Length: 276
Image 1 (cartoon, rainbow, N blue to C red):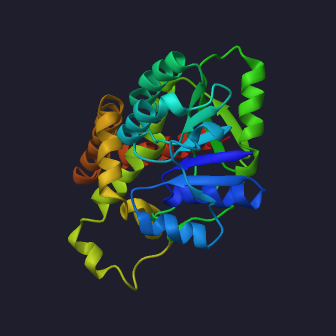
Image 2: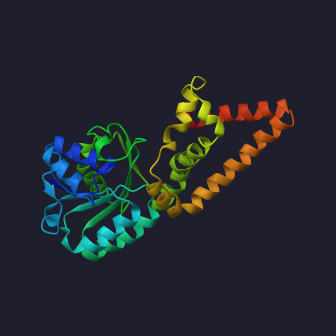
Image 3: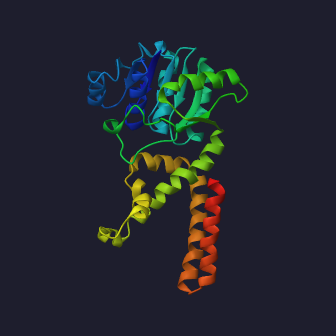
């Protein structure tokens, strides 16, 4: 199988390595010519993805920012083969899926929204690895939820990435849930580390500090776009968190141990409930 990958940073580079290790031909496009050359010399890619070979690819993975993914589709859709599947790997889906579904329908190929639920606090090709997605979940937003044959084909064509689970969703549901499971966690982590006390944490910090600050080291350009593209759901989650934090703050400030104890117990019970 010939696979085209647009963007070979952490996600695209890991996809490229996974598909290459599985024995497939991999062609890549990236704005950084040096990275493209490095991946080719390393044997991770077989050449540049261009208008001349796009039509030979059975699978094309869009591993760039949401806006760039739509722009690439608009520009290159005429070159994509009708038997090909295009899957984006963006962190939001509404802003990408709607225009890309329309483009795919116009030119007669198949597009599905996608979001690999795995990553690292470090970005870039140099941190990519073939087993990054092993055992992880891949969210898929298909054009037709009743097309079992297509869903099976998507599952099979993604096999080289070694996902442990394929989760089917709508773009709306994906963005609503991801605002909580991913985006708010990044906002909280990034804000938490701004305390002046963080400068003196060494010798006083352990696992809880490391867990809460791990994703504070983020790519601000990418996350700004993702947050703005999902502003409605993210703001709703942040409003809920701020209101909850005020309850804890008020109980502590007022010396209300009973209320604080119940708030903590409620949080413990909720954790046990949602995690089973």
